[in-house]
Image (cartoon, rainbow, N blue to C red):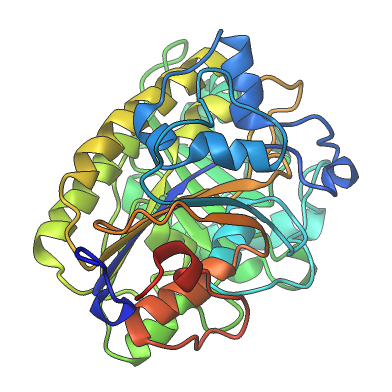
Length: 406
């Protein structure tokens, strides 16, 4: 059979995470307050349907059929270019760090702590003493709302604004003219050291902003200071075997830079895909691991289904351009890390299945990968594709099902 891609010929994996793009409530969604969440399906229904020809060709409609929840505008019929399935998270939690760690091969035993009433006094006292400043806020809040509320006082006092959310995060907002971005990063590094033990949040996030009262604007200088992975990830395993690893978007932040031979901190989804293409032009062997953040950060957390649907269409077009750069020996995996349904009352992440779309040029296997119990099947698959064997501790490779071999 001509055109067959033998697994021994696979040289490169392009792994793309659509941050916050869930595909239906997980079996334990109610335990997280997320019964009825279905990010893709609910968004598509509310806006009257979505047209996503590239994702449809990759099997998104068929993946939705697996969970029995069709996506309006995304048919499950027709020719499919690759293999498709859904994945169920097994680690407790529904945050970005947990989802990415599991994709990379880890299973967490406990969720990261959250602080719905703000952080305890001892944490704030330690943080203030370390940075030599008091703080404002220390409550659950929207980032855009809290800088409008406390931005003027921050300008007068020089005190950074501390806030959290339903996620396990310690966010620090500061005006760039009051606390320059490099100094804000140092402050965040201090917070990262302090927040340990029972206060070990998944991420400390720098949130610089500019402007004047009434028209403050957050800038592109956001930086995440994540907890280091508690065990070896697929990035570490590949690096130990001298296989190049590239992180695009938030990947370096999420994994604390560990296991990466190169990285680019792209500012938005379209730039992340453009940067992925640039790496594809130079990195001929290895893993290119890309996070596309806008679905979650700009639309899901703000409960904007119309913005979310537009972002899906833009991603679909950009993904089509990226796929023109795939060559024989490439393996494309498109998935997500959690849901973030913009149609529900909650602005938090949602505990959902995530789509799993797999494509190898020259190999249209059209395999139904079913429901994978654990995001870490991705790590197992990446290991087998690039090393010829599964070296990750967790997960079952779907490579042979998805690609096949004569």
